[in-house]
Each structure stands twice: as structure tokens, then as C-alpha cells.
Length: 162
Image (cartoon, rainbow, N blue to C red; front, side, top):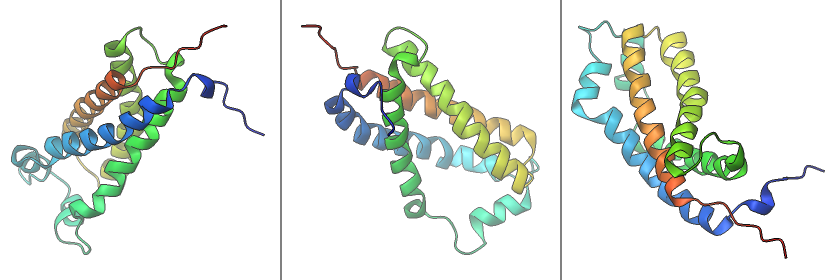
């Protein structure tokens, strides 16, 4: 049987509050970073050497990704990483909400964004490195922001030795 040694310190009430807020912030922040006109012009720029394959996936190949097709990832993923934030809380570097949130954002960036960008845009579509770097910087800002919001809401349950 698997036992969660840190489950007795998880503040389930705070986690229940943090998950929907984090999911909404994640959706809006990442959408704002990636879908604004400036980012769209950079990411899909022929002048900057964007891969025609990547552009086709997002603009012409059916089915064309829509916001509704992206919602599950933008809403479910934060629930998962919020849960792991609570489970790993004591192991996340830093003392205080800002440092823990920043550290967790870097961890998420390294595990989610770097993997995704190296696998799909670079590996499958041949995206140029300078555009990959731009997208990774957007991911960094987004995931650190969302993690700091999560860290600001979530607090570990205090165990009293009675």
C-alpha cells in the first residue's frame, strides 16, 4: 500500500481554494502571454524563420486548435501541479511564499515547458531556436506567476503536538 507521509500536513481547505484560482490564473496568464497579437506575430512569423509545419498545425491543418480544445490542459494541469505543490511543500526550496512560489515555478518550467518545447515545437515541427527561446521565456513568466499565486494562497497545515 502506498502511503503519503506528507498528507497529514496538507491543508486540504487551502488546496481546495487554491486549485480553482490557480487554474483560472493559469488560463488567463498563459493565454495572455501566448495569444496576444505581438506574440502571435513573433511565433508565426515567416520573417523570423518559423517552421511552416508548426504554422500549419496551428492555422490550417484540421482540426485547428481552438480555445475550447486547450481548456482541459489549461484547467486540469494546474490542479495536478497544485496538488504536488502541497505534497512537496516542505521539499520546495526557499522560506516564505515568494521564494517557494518562484522556486516551484522554475521547477514547473523545467519539467513542463522545456520538455514540451523541445519535444513538440523543436523536435516534431523544427521550430528555430530563437523562437523556441522566446516561447520558453513566455512559459517562464507564466509558470512563475502562476506558482507565486499558488504559493500566496496555499499554506501548510500546522501540526500541533498535544
